[in-house]
Image (cartoon, rainbow, N blue to C red; front, side):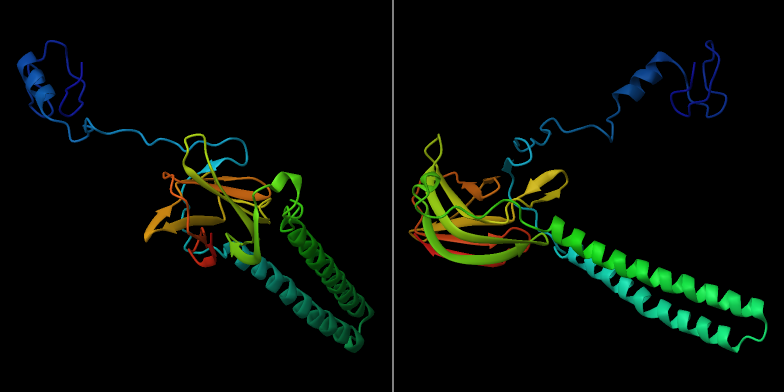
Length: 265
């Protein structure tokens, strides 16, 4: 058996541990077991409940504020600056190798410098091609393939009120709001849907799809904030825990809280 105090292996008939001197009697073990554990969990501890989601776009929790929403933009700038650096530096070294080849007395040395100049020129061409390829890929992955936003009068947009288009950026992507709709859910609580473009792009934090915008409304001097959002490729529907009709709708960016637009309903 093992000593319950220090973990030393001891004989089954031993009365005390030869290493630490702790008694091995049943009374001592029971007293040890009755001591409160520092790792005991409180009785009222409950596991966090995950937010419901359905597929890529689903119900989302209130937004997680990002301290640095332009990380992807800074990465792109770093790649561009690196390409420019090599595009400027390598031709300089190629020119130096060409000049050394012209001044070389021995034929082998001249051939060596010419070869180095050729390699540097080829690398410069490769960097230029890579630069344009990265630009094309960057434009492709940031392009909005969700299609144009629905317009008032379409059969699928009954009840949508058109507003002047308001553009904004969130989580490094560009979005716009061009209309909205106020409705109710199955429980009779208020819902607000904003219509726009760019919602085919989305950000994920800790595996949760983040809405790029957030919504609250004011009625009779009281402010009500959305409790969840459901995002599709052309709109975002915000859910509220109240049935009051909004008088003024306030849309902000989800990552930084900047104002996008206010709507008098």
